[in-house]
Image (cartoon, rainbow, N blue to C red):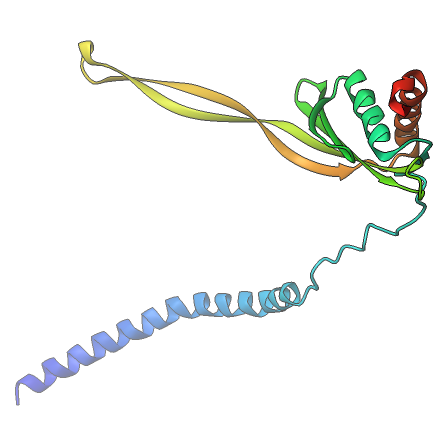
Length: 206
């Protein structure tokens, strides 16, 4: 059988090739297995991390920060609050007999903007309606300047397919935070201004 030596030689050559490939890939397989052993605990620990829990930010403390008593009706108190906001450059968005809302913008620096919204709610605090309780809340939104660059090309048909790349940029304000003002001094100064308008303008109490 003359073909038997040829088949035997073929098997020997290919067997040696398989062994050679096995020797090449064995270190790679061992390295991958080692990395898996090292990384597995890290992956498990990452998956087992508890979610971040934020504690409640409200403790329902003193009522003195956001409210004051006024010797005037709710309508007169809110009218004095409207005039107080107008005197400080606020744009009045909403005004009713028991609600006033105004907005004002600030720019501390060239890349930051602040938007302040102040809302005043006036409710009766006596049976006669001549004493009111004013609730004030100030919300401040913070915006930062975000710069984005984009590339474009300019085609010049007269000289063929010449393309001149250039950079184009655009700026936009992005909201980065929002908080309710909790400063006693801030609200105290506003309440003092409201009381001043109640005293200065007797027509509010007629």
